Image (cartoon, rainbow, N blue to C red; front, side, top):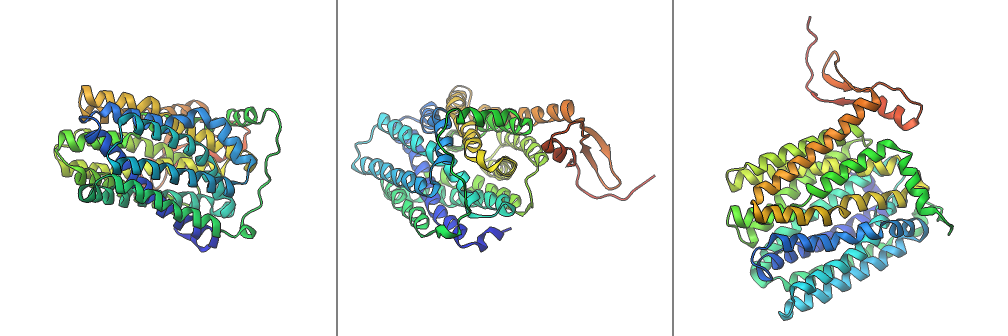
Length: 439
């Protein structure tokens, strides 16, 4: 489960990223809280706009960011993006501490942070392949998600307590300080132990080459469609949790932070389960998408705070199982020379859909209530799983069958593509419980 941590460079990266991620989740929680309770009167739409501004640049800058990740030194690029994020957190924290911050200023800082993050994300994803050998890449990707979600477990709860005790301003300043962890880790990484990567030489049409490569891979296209649907309409957790906590269950900052940590606890479990697998499988993405939709439906119907918290745990497991496996599948089956551009497209589709989904979900939460907003998340999981199943049935000859020990879905190989052949040999388990053979 933790085999990638045996490598010195990856240990440094993991530790630095963990510290920085805790600070980032603290800031996200504090930012959501001041928008919802201090700068507006529990306006979920304003919270959705903030998220849209923060994630929108990923959509616009995706082609350039992916090309930068393939062309420039990723370590140096990451040091610049982390330093800029530190400066933005420091400036916003000063405004909040002084008590002069306004809603439009939060919008502006969210947009600037989104621009820097758009450049940071594909470089961060692709840099992992320089830290570990290919055999350990799925494990390293899963451990990255574990780091991110462990921070999500600690950060919101810590932010909720700190906001209640000392206010939101110092939380932003602590986040600025936390970026020192990842910057220090990057500085100490031994360049001699990094895997050699051929940098992309400047030439025309390189962005189009990346898009053509993805079009030639129907399995990756289906994964990207699923990620877009769930990422756009399902992964709006701040809207879901904040409105359910305040409107449905009457909770304050501490309750909101604790609920955010519950879903993160499930996410940690999901990412650790992904780390145990030797390789990322397409079928796991499909099953996890369906489980995500079902768990969102149960959350929408939860009658009490504690039952809602229990369903959030399941949402965390299923959501991170899906996204971590999808991320690892795309990375490990993509040619190294294309990895930066493909991962930029992946991140754009995953996070870039938020400007579309977050305001919609926020308006639904305002108009119909947060339970209906969760219903949209449930529908997204069901549709995503349905898209994959339709493709498997129509293109791969999937059929339901019974083996000697379990029921499952089998794929029949009808093509010549190597990736099709790999998919065709997989069995997508539906019932994994063993059973004795009967007459």
